[in-house]
Image (cartoon, rainbow, N blue to C red; front, side, top):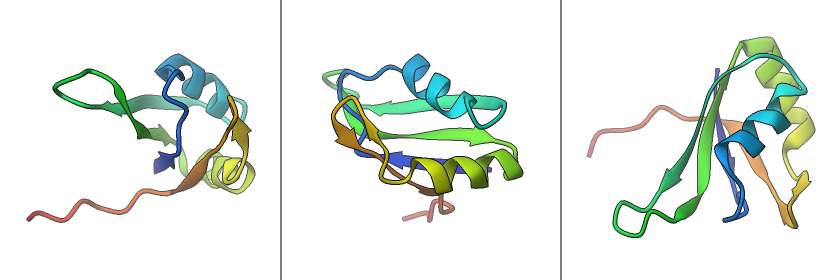
Length: 82
């Protein structure tokens, strides 16, 4: 399951996010999207987990305060080509 995570604190790392989601099950991958010019976090990213753990993580972490910001967590939608 691919999970969208929004409103990520700019100082958070992929390890921080991975550790947070690992409380709910095995995390396959974590990617925080960065600006290609500045290298700074854009404040959102994606976490991959198995379906059961992913559903539990979404239900538990949507709205969860992490480093002073409330995360927005939902199942990622498939990307549409422009």
